[in-house]
Image (cartoon, rainbow, N blue to C red; front, side, top):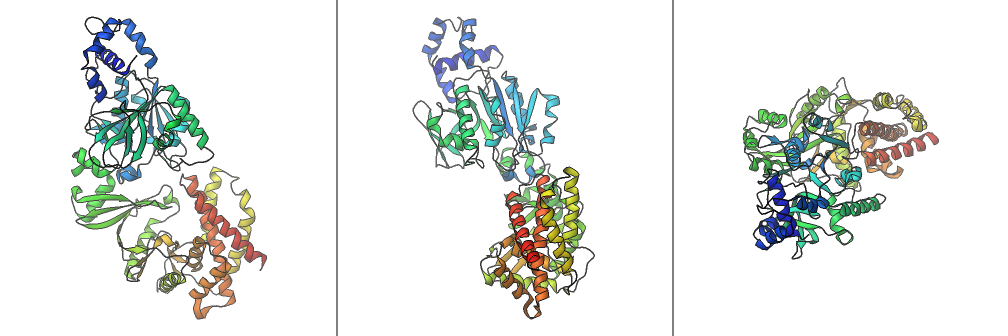
Length: 586
């Protein structure tokens, strides 16, 4: 059966099911205008004299039956900050209806009863869907490590004649059918540049190339349909990449883009520009649904509104910041001024005292070490600060930058303040170890030798003359800002308090992964005329102690679902290196 014949026959089937209002793609609009197609279908016995589908017509459609739909809903939608911090993107209400529910209803209306949703981020918030609809769930455990190609991999056993959908698509009319003719990707034709994938097609709309960010052309957006042959070929490509991981951080489209010549024909199915929508950013949603302009239903937006005594529509230009290891942050603008909002990471309430952090932030601002602080909520852990433009982080390879950093640390450590809280890296590590053992009692067996060496070093440092002082506790380079005028700001005070200064000096060395020579030089610059062999040993020991602390911290954060694998390995190596060197040469 030719494509035009299939389209008209399928439209007649939809009409017989009461679905005459289904979204018509551009190809269908052209096909229904061709009287020769209708003539052929009637003469072949597929349509009767009234244009209704016959039993023979239904039999002709059967090979094109859609088996199922897979909806990808595992991602955290970091570009959709701040709403994505509070709920998954698929659950946003657009025009009064959750995105994923609208899509489920449209699939069911098309006769697609087999619907599977791949979940990950905040998966528990989707659970109510199974009480309302006949849907199944699959969990993608690597949703925060790999891109959505991993969701298709965990659902690979379901890929047949399948609709592949994303949970954040919004179709003004129903685009789904019980039957589909060929593998395709939906989209529209644009006369302007858009940050989407484009398709370059032949005269038959077969996709020959896919390119990102062209100035005009066929934009790929919305749902896709894969025939069984296409699904099997795509699965083979995914399997080939498992050991390589080239596409781990990619959307599935990139695997298709790079292997079109190894896949069955893939077509562009064109719709009207106003029928398909996806919302990558909060401002796009506001433009589409003005209900979000005055009332976003977001606690985060409400918090900002109350702090600045402004209207929600004044809060604009949301920009995600690269996710930190502890928290997630984003930039926003009010009346032309940029600010940054810190949203606390999962599980941090068990290891960070927010009341202490707020007190520290006030002190750091008072002594002009961190002038950015504006407000913090101690109950929920969120914080608002002034955003600093035009700065750079210190270069670990620059000793001039080291001097700038150490100058601030010496100033901090001489502040005449004593508080009743602060990091105790050995004791704090033991506490986190206990929480980890609650989940897996054997998790620390491989590290007992390292733990013993670190404990010996810790006990030895307690016998010297290095006194506790006001410390930052998290001095890696991402918390330093060197401004164009040479001034230095130290930010993020979650781990600050009255502690051993070896913590601050040691952690900078740990994150820089300095060798013994560079570490010794750094410590001597910090100590200056106060340097003694005993004090040098103290600060060298704290390199191992603080590296061990952050290693245990990473194990805990990993148990909470954070992606800290690379940092955890680096901290472990530094703890082993310095603990072994100091203990073996003691």
